[in-house]
Amino acid sequence: MTPETKHLEVTLQTQVESVNLAEEMCLRVAEAAGFGEDDCYRIGMSVREGVINAFHYGNQEKPEKKIHLAVDLTPDKMIIHVLDEGKGFSLADVPDPLAEENLLSTSGRGIFLMRAFMDEFEVVTGQNGGAEVIMSKKLPTPGSSEPNGQGGQGGSAKTPQQEA
Amino acid sequence: MALHATHRDAGRVTVVDLSGRITLGEGSALLRKTIRALLDEDRSQLLLNLGDVDYIDSSGIGELVSAFTAAKSRNGDMKLLNLTKKVRDLLQITKLFTVFEVFTDETTALRSFS
Image (tube, rainbow over all chains, first blue to last red; front, side, top):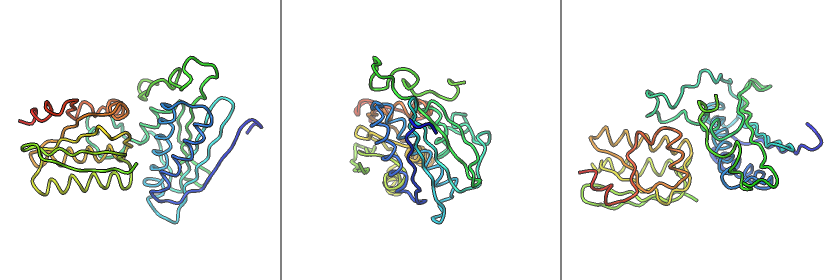
């Protein structure tokens, strides 16, 4: 971590309320960092989905487990880490929610939304063996013609297929 | 903002007016409870007015899909009315825009059930 990086981390309970708490916390950081309304929405949604994933799939809603949320604000991007205390998973095992046979599934869209709404997204195995979601969004360029962050990479929701 | 749901009859169709956020927790649970209660009363022709719903997460999307399949399984239907831009965008990127029938005008929406 460079001296210019601001770091914030919090340990959350495995409960539904943590989803809103994490979203609100990251939205405040994103607004302070200069992201516009559209990008704040995408960041907030991605944080929600990351924490829902940790709450439901990672920690399996077990209250004795924790969710670790960290935010790094570097000079050029906001990086969000969501670490659970579950068994971890591989992205390759996550079904494609856009596949015809999965369109009417009532779950399984969280990873897709995080990929679509953030500039970078990956899942690694955390130090405790759980899954760590790491995602980032580039900060809006000062003096940009799109000061609300609607230009550049954050301009529109991308599907993973479009990113490939 | 917490989800708020009311419903009214329009002929054989029940219009469910929703406002607020459909998200994990109370929002999704209220939508599930509302739809379940209507289906239990044999009201299976449902038009969900989402004009005042400004936010839906993956849990809310799951509830919409669940409501749709539950209505279909009772030989009914569930259609959507008045999507906000964020909700419309969300349904487009998740390809659910191709699954749900979506309307911008209530009269047209109601007529489509007949």
